[in-house]
Image (cartoon, rainbow over all chains, first blue to last red; front, top):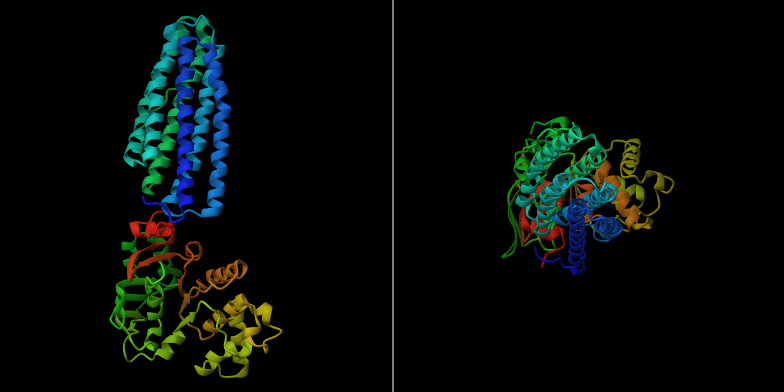
Length: 230
Length: 276
């Protein structure tokens, strides 16, 4: 799309998108590092992930300020309006993803160090498709690619299936050995957090799609596996 | 044209795309293949556009795109320009208003117009309003005329401000009041359609807000067509928006759709401020 006659308007929209992508990048490594901390029992790494969250919150507040100012001064229309709207929504979703990752990292610090590697690995395995969803949807945001956004949106079902199988796996550990119940409960929350991050990626995908096309993706049309925890 | 208010209103809220607009069953005015030239220079190219009743249609586009010229076709104001040639049909109440049998003076009593700059007659506030009903013989008695003046001023939201000084000159009012006086004058002859050519461009934001509030009120009774350079104004006051460019109608649709998701690239570029 060509530039605005008022070039500062284009610059402001570009900066908005750049800040959101920067925030997305930070959040994406938070997911991976938090789950890696679980996997390797790396308390130091977990602490570092928690310490990154204020940076995300600050970026969110900053982006929101830019948006309010931009609406007041530029009164965006058409694609610009959709871009500003979607930026406002996406920034909120990313902040939530940051919180959920921070929560995983906090739990990682509290996990009994005797928890075995097989139990830890489950979380790590699920982190990779989840962070890939985020990575793909951020790419779609950066390029304004509606079909890429839709692919992410449809891909959430895989995450849900992953969650269901991890849930069963954790239950099996806990039934076999009641001493793992404490750790298992933490693990279940971590898995749930990852599953929710997947949902946030789906939401972001909907906003990217709306921004690019002006059309809404309807949640009811999305392929969905029923969740095991109801 | 057989129509009822409820039917036409339903059709208005239902449609979203240009195709549906063109399929509107009960437009107040149906413009078909309008071409306008000034001498050798063609200003409007083959525009067909239905204008629905009891709603506001905004015409937007860059300067010189033909939106004012098009507006002036609707009450044959272009007749007054010698070199101007208009072809095509403009159907109102089953008649083509371009038909030579149509009396333009009578037509203009059915299609009122408000201009960019308020232009009250150099007469009293009362006479400004009473002039139209008098020449069209709409009032039989002095009481009738008083009532008409009051009703028109009330509808234009000006009555409370001027009721105690009806004999003061019209041009003693503020700019915004003068514009409302002109609107009251236009509605005094009981028009069916009101044309507005940038009615707020000479007014401050408060007076503009009053006029916009008035437009919103008037659309319950009239078919309103407004030309405006302010996209925000078009977005605020209209239900349908038509975008003109270089004498062509580029896109017409529900105002919401035009400003959130225009179908045409040229519309998008214009309303987002990207026109080179």
